[in-house]
Length: 460
Image (tube, rainbow, N blue to C red):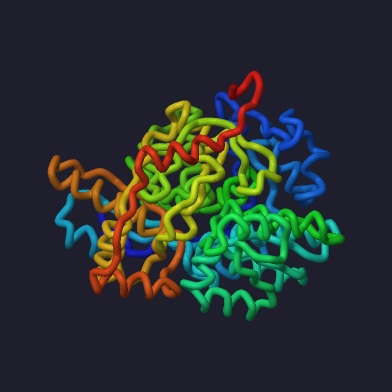
């Protein structure tokens, strides 16, 4: 048999024409979203003032296994898709492992990440509805950049509330978003009631994704012909990101491969949910049984140390409550460099799959060990990975080293969700030995759990 090439490429015609709706194959659905005032299940009319109509329908769809990708979105995908599946031969060699390591690389666009898959969809549906402006939040900046690109393409105005620590750490992320026409505001800010409240509590706050979400939602509902869009967590986002897993599975089938282990970094769940989608579908329907690993920062361990409970998706408590693994909406994550993973909760879909045992493992890793893996990967595979993606690299290396010990030639697939060219200050800190690790104590976590709402009949 001839050697498998480094790049296993698909053709333009092989870009999926439909998204895969994982919920259609789930044995049990996650609980309904709850209204933040009444604590009653949310109905469609509750969502429409915040989200675009078609996206609301996708959010609650539990029956349609496949949903057509509109031609306009499919044409946009052709600019940067299909993304390559790459065999990490050089990493295998330096690790001296019998494992076969593959990664799905989503960094081949200006945003440097997978976020453009759902940004294009959400901007398109807003444009089709006649919406003229959008608001959102961003942590590390990949999502804000992707949405700025999509809004520029579809002709929409955009305001991005960027978590303040990332706003200060990554000024060039702000610059590139502004290049595409977006307005960028450091969060918490004095431009919203929620932001003013947070600053009154803590004038030196470095911000959080939960706070930035609150500000973006507030701005959206107070602005005529405007809607809020979100880059992770929601069911609609995991639907759009399924294009990653569908492409990965098709590419691996071309070389007669099937992964034993599938690994993704986990913040809100968009990348992990997208990568595992097609393979999780196999597991749910009995066609395959890969081992799934969600990798999160030890500083914000929502799955590995969180609680499965109803919680607010934002710090200001104005969004619906979701059933998810959470550290509590008042949890204040450490200002480490994996900004895109600094979120207190996890996707309701992935939380339910983890709670029911289909998503096998949640693994928390420290920041210094992540950058150690990222540096090794960069030296041998020539890609400087984002800190978020590097969590998956860390776990992939660890699994490959286990194979070295046991002699098992397992096939490992991980998601490389983005590039780290805006994270050079973090790489510098790591090289100079100035990077530190933060792991919250049980007491730290209890303070976050204390903010979980008391819902009669559900969480008393």
